[in-house]
Image (cartoon, rainbow, N blue to C red; front, top):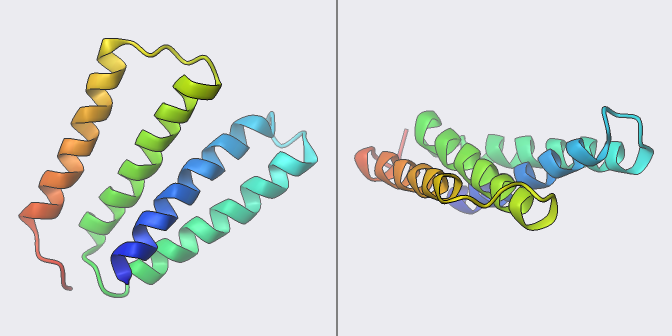
Length: 108
């Protein structure tokens, strides 16, 4: 269950990053509200996952999901460039998170 918390929390990290962009520096009400709600959910889920998982591994997975999700959303919805190097960088993030997860234990 702990991994599910971290993974879903990472998805909410993507949501809070998008909401932050859409808030235009906290000047738009609903994106700002969305940011506040999604950041609270994301952090809360990460906290629940950290009850059972090693902090370095769980945090790397959470950040990795958020970073990759945000980069992909940027390319799909915000006209961020979808260059070979960007896509390769996403692959390196995913590879790094997988390797970090494989290198450590799943307990405290």
